[in-house]
Image (cartoon, rainbow, N blue to C red):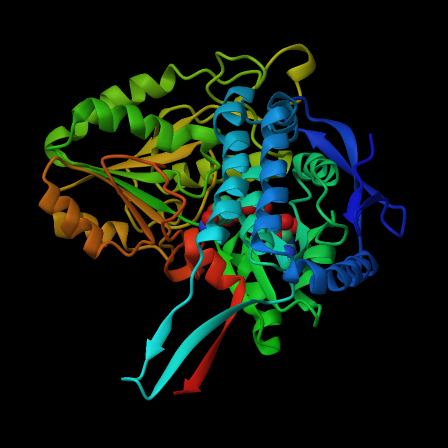
Length: 479
Ligand code: NAD
């Protein structure tokens, strides 16, 4: 089956008629083909988006709301098909895609469809002498580039605010997981999204992503992906004065104080370590446990992790499915080897898993817990982005704050304590865009989402995203 680009309202092949292999990570086999698009395809998408902008930007908010709500309804109608497609493309358990990825994609669209109806701008009164008000205008043609770990979830998280604010969009899903974006383009056609308003161009980052970044007509880029790619994009886009929102990598601390609710911290830490095979930018990959409960927590954690089932993503009893690609599996295995070279001891896991039959070539890896490493070794400083966590004891609040803040990243942190003052102090002292106290991945879509340090620039979520996708003009009227 050939995936197609969605340009000017139609599903079309790339101009060069070239396609790339698309693998099913559970079987290791090619199961479809993805357009190997080039700059020429981006130029065509730009023409379509530019033509669509004058009408779409003047379309009433009510009309934009209506078509976006139809898209959200269709995502829900196709829930099962989309969940299966996401799992087949990414390797994640169907159960996870059913409960998290696909419902969240519909919520993203609905959230911004309704948010635009409530979006207001400021006015500044100069004591009766004049009045200023802020006009918020859509930017024009904007670019949205997304990663493979939560494919439709993050794709919709970007394009929904861009479209709701009246922009037209050129979007590029990850070449590793293109399928649900393709199915989404069919949904947009069925929902009656006017042609050219959203254009989806598939292909490699170095070709399609780079062409979006370098296109002088595309005035804003919203990117989610790795920190190195973010740097490349910033280098190209900054001299062109493009607006940039960069959501990048993380190396998140999961801090467990002795006064925590032990069972809750334990249960949630298993999830925050290994959900989606540890391939969520918000996963807690460095577990710090206060010394008085270190041995107890470690023993209970390792016991729970060793009972997790790595298996067929279609099997509802599988806790972990396949890693997204062979290359990524090798990278994660490389970090397990590095951890051992650095003096770490594997408490559980560490090995590739070989399943039977059709799944024999899939990318499976045991959930892995490593002890005995210093907080500042490479294993504890670099993003692994797989089912691998380290566990370390700490003695004081100050010490664990230093450990937690020692990396170049600052995306998310989790703190477990029943002392709410301590929770507040930690939240104030951690260098992190998001701090969860006694929970993980609890998301209110209105809140600012993003990282500090090398985890990114800017914030998504709620009106932050609508602010990003609009340009403010101050209008001053003398009274
Ligand atoms: P990646 O940076 O390799 O790719 C992300 C996207 O950028 C893909 O669509 C890719 O094709 C494109 N791309 C690659 N090179 C490009 C270039 N030169 N110019 C423009 N676009 C280019 O990231 P990935 O491997 O797909 O995703 C994993 C990374 O994403 C991890 O580092 C993870 O932490 C991060 N991530 C961050 C968040 C967040 O919200 N902060 C969320 C999810 C994932």
